[in-house]
Image (cartoon, rainbow, N blue to C red; front, side, top):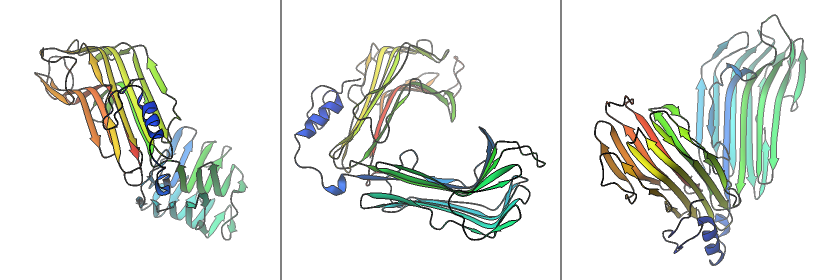
Length: 427
């Protein structure tokens, strides 16, 4: 783990950042106000129709919308909506208009999916309207979920009319499978609650005259909501990786030895990922890559820290070389409003750039070098926003035709570390 020395604004001279900040905070004054001691995270998603066989998608999710993701977002008032005019995929599914939504309020996350003129399996299941609603809310410290508002209009299954909305998880069999109506899947844990509502969930279990493969599943009107209570003024995020190569939006080389800090932290444990070498052909090679991540979320302090260490680097046959490259990124807050960041610990050992003898290991942050006949080289690049810091120790962007035959738009990054925080004021 990289040591972050001389942290800005904290008067810390040495030692690991997480230990140092926690020791410092132990000597701070009183606890923060109760309003800052919890962060409520919202997540919600919905779609109209979906069909698949195992890992094979037969019909992609229609009008999908979502807010949050993972643990969720701290943003109050987030909202997404989606609409499609119809779905025409007989004999699996035909529908009219589909409207979907996902949103957050001060204490709730809600998702809806409203599907009109439903016709499944060549008329085996029909309905004028199928609506799924999932809401998860907080009342005091209690989390609860509800499917209130979910309903069917003129539902018919295998010739039988179904009045009203069936009880949750009602199963009706038919000759080559079964359907679950008002399917409800609940998630309940300490500080976490969620509900998935699938108003129609069809399971094909046998061969049939419609030639729909056994094991096919069909879902109509899916709504999912959830809340997570984080016991601190913010939640954390952060990633680190050794190398990555993109050409525009096309990934040429996925991140090597990646690590990610989960939003509720690691309880002081260091996550480590390491590989012995990297070989990206003529683009880049390296020795050992080691990436780390760590995070803590408490009532009085929140911090995230990542690092990436790359040894024996060689980019483009000696264009850029270094014995060791280290990237470090840290973010912390005690109130969820004022965020601090550090790139301490980021450094080079024996850095060399062909044609630029003035460049050495003591290069200043955000140094930009023009490489004749190639493009732009960034060294110790630091990117910050109101709640985020990213350190890219090397980034080479190819902008010119070159004798190496490297495609214009190629972006090579080495030793990348980032850390971020998310709170009510800075989601």
